[in-house]
Image (cartoon, rainbow, N blue to C red; front, side):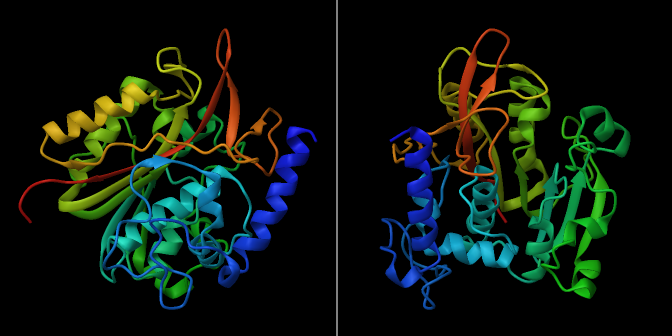
Length: 313
């Protein structure tokens, strides 16, 4: 059986299990909620801390539950994993309480601003200006919103609530303005690898905590180089962070007085994870991807990062 055939077989099994939560074994670390879907907030370890996208996460009942909230069909795609990861990290830590204030960076047309507003949060959704988006190709690939309403085009949030709770602002992630302060949470979904270099991406991740109040939560997803801890794409429109880059970031944030757990770099070897998607990329499965550098190909996947701002509330 070919790798594609094995992945398709595993994909069918995964979707059947994920859409039938009662028959799905609860993975280690998952705190099942009273409804068998979303987890309860208190007690037990977090479902997600800093770590790598894995096939096993798609088997969790919570994954299908978040897909329903996002009005997204369950599919084995790392971008969907990023949305679920960010939402789950914030929800289980109590950051999405009514009245909480959040800011998203490089939001494009992602559904998270609408999702968080539907849960009662007040959201500032930010992205580069239209001219920069055209130059970077985000408009051509439908990854830049032309209007605020496009962030709720799935109808995730009641229109009146969305209009009352969501604002849009232009922000350059390489120069976050000093007047963005005091938020309860911030997020970005695979945006910091597009800032020009690894150095600039790491600088943004470190500075992102500046916009938070003490105890506020920063959650980001980005690209992880699975091929090499040394060679990588370190400059250009898309860079690939290496394990040592993220380990150094965690150490730096701890030195700044923030909370930053070690990144769990363990990744699985299930059928879908053994399939490496090549250009032109498939709609699914799409967990591990081959990305071309100047002289070689790199295997990459998504990694999630969670930080808590230090200091007295």
